[in-house]
Image (cartoon, rainbow over all chains, first blue to last red; front, top):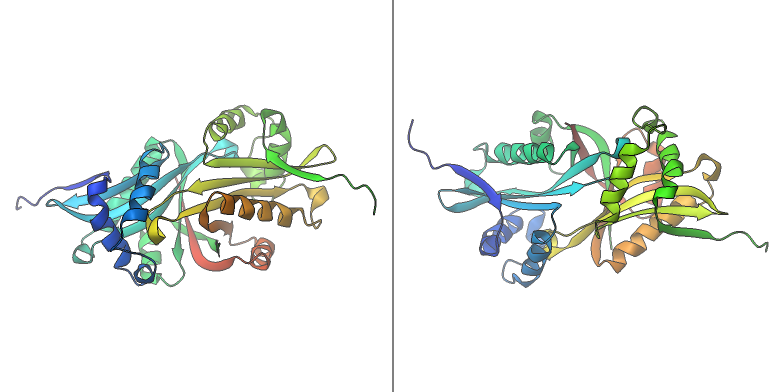
Length: 153
Length: 153
């Protein structure tokens, strides 16, 4: 065994924004939706996330580089006897680290955090075109039981 | 025109819980998941929702009867240039009012509220078995663009 650098998953800070936004933009769908040259709107959004105890925006750090990100939202509710659920959004793994198991580690982190927050259910939606992602979530135990609807405003 | 009673959509209160839980339970999927005879877990969940400024649990009231409910969650995020999105959950219409357009009124309320909260996107998931609901959301302009994954903890 070599002394491979440990992977850390920790809350995102403003200093992580360039790396996070670069990952959001380095994606077939994200390429047209992000503005990595102007971080202003992301700074405002990060502040709002940081102030909200039900929001957990994290980065995965490996050898001092930000190589992954995801957002976990804790959603209390009345359905299912007052169950709390969690929602995973914005999962991104740096191109250099794909296939390394990092995505699995990050989603497992989100599942563990959801248990710690007394959630009964973890949910997410994935664009119908992301068939590799669908297999990935099914391997992690998720069931593709729902149809995800979106309305752009 | 008769003087038909107005429909009001307003934040849910503890007094509404019996009617809300009865609607959650009066549903092919909800029947096995709810406990209308024990409101204790719902009271705790309602308190948590009421304390959270990003949560909007509402009821529709018609002629002094609670006839509908939905939960709207406002979710800030980094993706899409720091967009805020909203998520609709737990849409229920009383059996006596189905087909009356009440569901449409409630979802239109959620869309209007999402705009007022500066959301760029409204999303929801619907169980794959609820094909009538899928047509309903498509008529309202939602696109069935995603696959919804769930993991029970």
